[in-house]
Amino acid sequence: DKGYVSAELDRYLADRGVTLLRPSYRNRTPRPGEHLLKPIRQIIESVNDTLKGQLDLELHGGRSIDGVGVRVAQRLLALTAAIWHNRATGQPVTRSLIAYDH
Image (cartoon, rainbow, N blue to C red; front, side):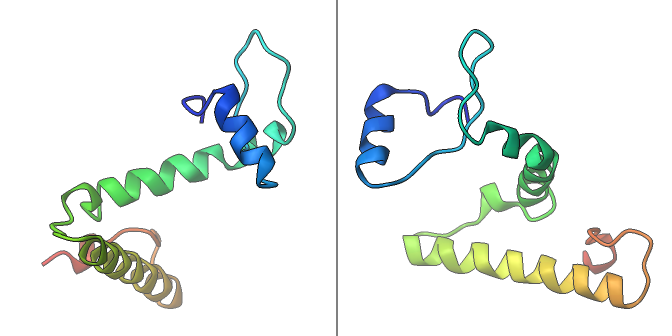
Protein backbone atom coordinates (compact mmCIF):
# COMPACT_ATOMS: atom_id res chain seq x y z
CA ASP A 1 0.00 0.00 0.00
CA LYS A 2 1.10 3.63 0.09
CA GLY A 3 2.81 3.02 3.42
CA TYR A 4 5.56 1.12 1.62
CA VAL A 5 7.04 4.12 -0.14
CA SER A 6 10.80 4.42 0.09
CA ALA A 7 13.66 4.39 -2.37
CA GLU A 8 15.55 2.04 -0.04
CA LEU A 9 12.75 -0.55 -0.11
CA ASP A 10 12.45 -0.22 -3.91
CA ARG A 11 16.20 -0.84 -4.34
CA TYR A 12 16.16 -3.77 -1.89
CA LEU A 13 13.30 -5.46 -3.74
CA ALA A 14 14.69 -4.67 -7.20
CA ASP A 15 18.02 -6.26 -6.26
CA ARG A 16 16.06 -9.43 -5.53
CA GLY A 17 13.93 -9.28 -8.67
CA VAL A 18 10.73 -8.35 -6.83
CA THR A 19 8.25 -5.72 -7.99
CA LEU A 20 5.92 -4.41 -5.31
CA LEU A 21 2.46 -3.47 -6.57
CA ARG A 22 1.19 -0.39 -4.80
CA PRO A 23 -0.83 2.67 -5.71
CA SER A 24 1.00 5.88 -6.50
CA TYR A 25 0.42 9.22 -4.90
CA ARG A 26 -1.75 11.69 -6.80
CA ASN A 27 1.17 13.93 -7.63
CA ARG A 28 3.39 11.12 -8.98
CA THR A 29 3.59 9.11 -12.16
CA PRO A 30 1.44 5.96 -12.05
CA ARG A 31 3.47 2.91 -11.06
CA PRO A 32 3.79 -0.18 -13.26
CA GLY A 33 1.02 -2.67 -12.50
CA GLU A 34 -1.00 -0.13 -10.51
CA HIS A 35 -4.02 -0.72 -12.76
CA LEU A 36 -4.08 -4.34 -11.55
CA LEU A 37 -4.85 -3.25 -7.99
CA LYS A 38 -8.02 -1.28 -8.65
CA PRO A 39 -10.31 -4.20 -9.61
CA ILE A 40 -9.29 -6.27 -6.60
CA ARG A 41 -9.11 -3.50 -3.98
CA GLN A 42 -12.66 -4.19 -2.76
CA ILE A 43 -11.92 -7.90 -2.47
CA ILE A 44 -8.78 -7.19 -0.44
CA GLU A 45 -10.65 -4.86 1.92
CA SER A 46 -13.50 -7.37 2.25
CA VAL A 47 -11.13 -10.21 3.13
CA ASN A 48 -9.32 -8.02 5.69
CA ASP A 49 -12.63 -7.02 7.25
CA THR A 50 -13.73 -10.66 7.47
CA LEU A 51 -10.43 -11.71 9.04
CA LYS A 52 -10.67 -8.98 11.66
CA GLY A 53 -14.41 -9.05 12.29
CA GLN A 54 -15.91 -12.49 11.86
CA LEU A 55 -12.78 -14.46 12.66
CA ASP A 56 -11.42 -12.27 15.49
CA LEU A 57 -8.01 -12.56 13.89
CA GLU A 58 -6.59 -9.71 15.95
CA LEU A 59 -7.49 -11.64 19.12
CA HIS A 60 -5.93 -14.94 18.10
CA GLY A 61 -4.45 -15.80 21.51
CA GLY A 62 -1.31 -17.38 20.08
CA ARG A 63 1.76 -17.22 22.31
CA SER A 64 4.35 -18.15 19.71
CA ILE A 65 4.82 -17.76 15.97
CA ASP A 66 3.73 -21.37 15.48
CA GLY A 67 0.69 -20.86 17.72
CA VAL A 68 -0.38 -17.78 15.79
CA GLY A 69 0.09 -19.64 12.49
CA VAL A 70 -2.03 -22.56 13.65
CA ARG A 71 -4.83 -20.32 14.92
CA VAL A 72 -4.88 -18.24 11.75
CA ALA A 73 -4.95 -21.42 9.66
CA GLN A 74 -7.81 -22.86 11.76
CA ARG A 75 -9.91 -19.76 11.23
CA LEU A 76 -9.21 -19.61 7.50
CA LEU A 77 -10.06 -23.28 7.09
CA ALA A 78 -13.27 -22.83 9.09
CA LEU A 79 -14.31 -19.90 6.90
CA THR A 80 -13.46 -21.85 3.75
CA ALA A 81 -15.52 -24.81 4.93
CA ALA A 82 -18.45 -22.54 5.82
CA ILE A 83 -18.34 -20.85 2.39
CA TRP A 84 -18.23 -24.23 0.66
CA HIS A 85 -21.11 -25.55 2.76
CA ASN A 86 -23.21 -22.41 2.24
CA ARG A 87 -22.70 -22.61 -1.53
CA ALA A 88 -23.39 -26.35 -1.64
CA THR A 89 -26.66 -25.93 0.27
CA GLY A 90 -27.77 -22.86 -1.69
CA GLN A 91 -27.63 -20.34 1.14
CA PRO A 92 -28.31 -16.74 0.07
CA VAL A 93 -25.22 -15.38 1.86
CA THR A 94 -22.19 -17.59 1.36
CA ARG A 95 -19.65 -15.76 3.55
CA SER A 96 -21.74 -15.59 6.68
CA LEU A 97 -20.70 -17.56 9.74
CA ILE A 98 -23.68 -16.50 11.85
CA ALA A 99 -25.37 -19.91 11.53
CA TYR A 100 -22.22 -21.56 12.97
CA ASP A 101 -21.68 -19.13 15.85
CA HIS A 102 -22.50 -21.07 18.99
